[in-house]
Image 1 (cartoon, helix red, strand yellow):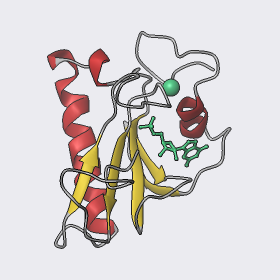
Image 2 (spheres, helix red, strand yellow):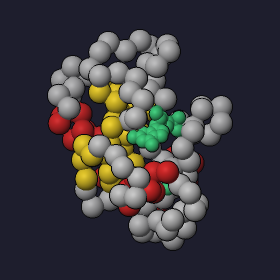
Image 3 (tube, protein in one colour):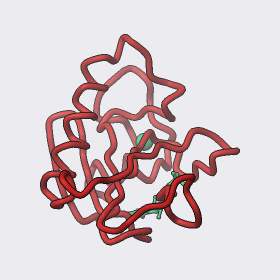
Image 4 (cartoon, protein in one colour):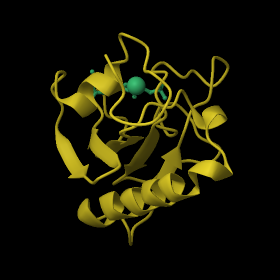
Length: 130
Ligand code: 5GP
Ligand code: ZN
């Protein structure tokens, strides 16, 4: 499956590229020009939304200052999701897993936005969202 934009072609079977393209169903929370947010299929909390760039990037390791605009868009999308889900005031956690030791299962950059309950720190169980 091809990435929507950018120079790096997506791996052929990237799940989140499929979700962005609409070929894999998802429950949309927010859709902007550059970012897409949808409900996690296995929520760790009452609110558990994944925010992804539409462009395929493997993880935070693939992002740098040359993507400053996209990073700003992602932060805006995260905050918009929190407002829309009613957790901006009560608080929420943003997690991105990078690589094997962090347990990154889907190799397309994504931010878990979790909230709607009290979250422990350091995270225990599903408190980190992924
Ligand atoms: P990671 O461990 O890579 O940070 O998190 C991947 C997340 O994607 C997990 O929380 C998992 O529940 C979620 N996920 C995996 N497959 C699907 C899917 O097909 N649809 C949705 N909406 N979420 C998925
Ligand atoms: Zn992808």
